[in-house]
Length: 113
Image 1 (cartoon, rainbow, N blue to C red):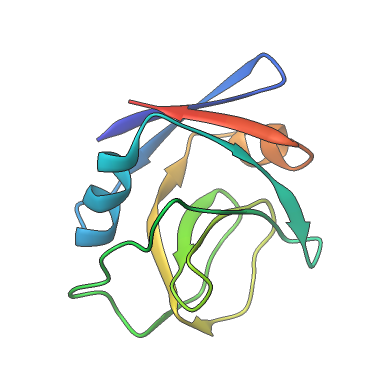
Image 2 (image 1 turned 90 degrees about the horizontal axis):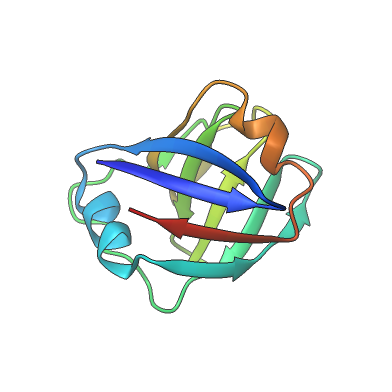
C-alpha cells in the first residue's frame, strides 16, 4: 500500500509492507502526529493505539528510510539513520529515496493514503 507523509510542505511517498502491523497502521490513516527526536537516529510519535504484531519477527535492524512500530512503547518510528537490531521493532514499510533526509528534522507530519 502506498502512503504519503507531508511535513513542512514537503511530501514523501512511502510503501507499507503486507504485515498485520502495517495493515493495522493503514487503518488509522489519516493521522497528524507531532514528532520528536530519539537518539539522533529516528523521529518518533505516540500512536492513538497499539498496532497488531501478529506474525511479526521478535526484533528488527532498522535502516535509514524505514517506518516502524516500536511495540513496547506503542510508537511510530521514522528512521533517518541506521540503527542496531532491537527487540520489539516491527518494520511497517519504507520511505521513497530521499525521504529520510526530508523527515529527519520534521516536527509535525501528516500521513495519509
